[in-house]
Length: 255
Image 1 (cartoon, rainbow, N blue to C red):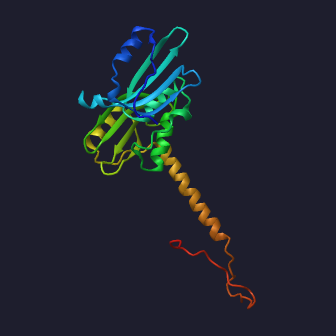
Image 2: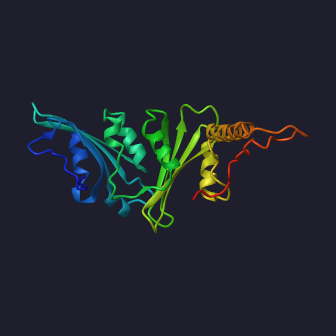
Image 3: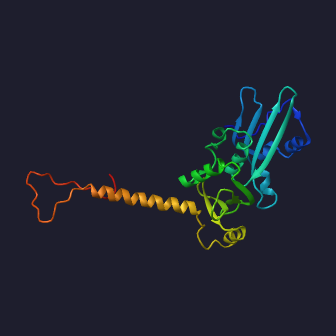
């Protein structure tokens, strides 16, 4: 993937004032493409997620990830451009998907960039990316200093309990990985208090606690079923000399 941004607007003019303004706010040298998709064969639409390095020199805390959609009318030699800034990549991807980008085409970020540190991060990213209009963004903040982090405070339209959801992304300054976690709060004030204090773990969503309990229950049942399959000798009974001894599972580290 080419990390330099090319809007492919040669010989095209803005179709309206908003598109002209959107084009003028970008300088290609500031933007690093993270993931992109261009329709074929005529390239009528482009969907781009890019990091805007110029934001780091602006107002502290401002979102740095730009989502950009370009639609070209080749018959009229015009284009329209829409843009939005987000604190993290999944919310930028979600914005583009809601505007017609095929989800599979924008999901993969270039391997040369920071990567998810664990499976939970991957699952939460997919949850945001594919959420449609589920999350209403209330506020966000991005920090370039150690610890590097970006958070997005949202209202979850599908949550029955604790509808305020905080998505916290934390980077590792020593290796190029990051984690993303979801916290659940009863209201915005509780979430902001946690962000200011952080003396307690990030409260997990109630539905995820239920999933964890279900996994523990299934694991316990599996262990119970496994042990019940081992034949038992009745008390006082004599084992036949021709009966082979029962092999029990060996616990320990596999070789």
